[in-house]
Length: 102
Image 1 (cartoon, helix red, strand yellow):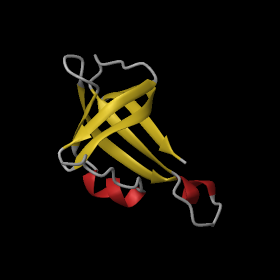
Image 2 (cartoon, helix red, strand yellow; image 1 turned 180 degrees about the horizontal axis):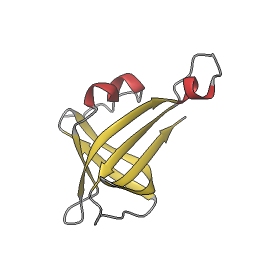
Image 3 (cartoon, helix red, strand yellow; image 1 turned 60 degrees about the horizontal axis):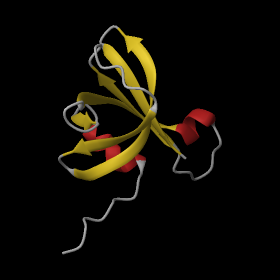
Image 4 (cartoon, helix red, strand yellow; image 1 turned 45 degrees about the vertical axis):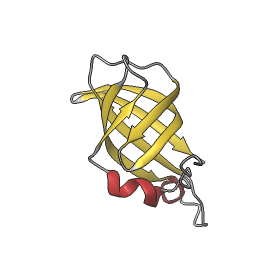
């Protein structure tokens, strides 16, 4: 048996998952975080050309302050992904984490 194919990263892959919970990291230190934003950076930058640049923003619990780095990110509808996440800091509802795809 072969390994599951890794999907091509695109904004369209993640947009249907907005509002859903992802698992970040490996047990026993894994954190559940809700995908709260999926942004098309091409439009935000106003470049007006076809691009796959986008960012994803998750919201996790306040007590989970993951350092910037590569984490396994899991969701039931996707194979596990290894993503570079940056902690953007706290907001009223929790701690924010961002992945940028260029």
